Image 1 (cartoon, rainbow, N blue to C red):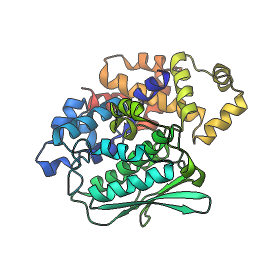
Image 2 (image 1 turned 90 degrees about the vertical axis):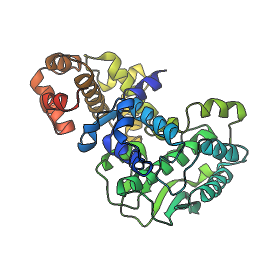
Image 3 (image 1 turned 120 degrees about the vertical axis):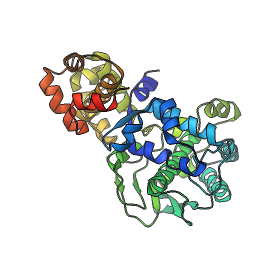
Image 4 (image 1 turned 135 degrees about the vertical axis):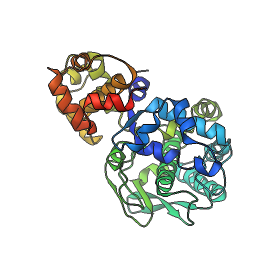
Length: 343
């Protein structure tokens, strides 16, 4: 339960929202209708600094799929009718190893997607998931970027579920310039991301290809209740320690817990905790800042709590310190942020 609460309190950059709604125009549907039902301010799309709670983003994800009967969000020349993801899962479920499962996934996607070709290659001690665009997409650049993002998260998330353990990507290269939300890629995809590549390439240890498939029909039923949205809208699953640290920090608010205190609560030495966070591409200060930013954004837009009380609840010594920090995080002062985004 702790892990789910941590994810639910997280937020995503608005760039992911711009991408997911970019295919709606082809269906003659107003994006504002879906945004309103998901609890997302339409004005947020025009502000590259805006952030959206993960829960609202997941709600938007499901609303679009249900309304269009398209698990591809209107991004592709042919819709992926509801049930496509289930058939993809069932096709991979009976594979013996991840290597075989990924091959089946690639073959299935070749059938249903005209624009992309997916393959997995071995390169020395690394496995490389390759996604090549074969034809133009019927949407703009924001939709094209999101199509690559979605496809990688979907394949990666399904692969990790099939083997029953986190499957960390070592690095990923994307075939487009850095989007406005590129800073988020480290949290979503891999600790090392690059851009302007010829095709999408995501690397992970080759040994993972030999992992056995550990899921069965009973597990699939529970999995499908929250998929595909559940595996394609959240941050990297290999950041388990970071999520536990975030939980510990939130539980202690407004008190600020030190690294030794958190390490003791997690039954780790401070040195081990520091190393684990480094391995996950983050730090105690980065997690603390992200937590404060997300909570501040939520309280400013969803409540009328005075700003000085928000600052105190987040552990700031005074309101001026909070003002400086919030402006650094979002590019706006808290009053301006509240005026623009409060619903």
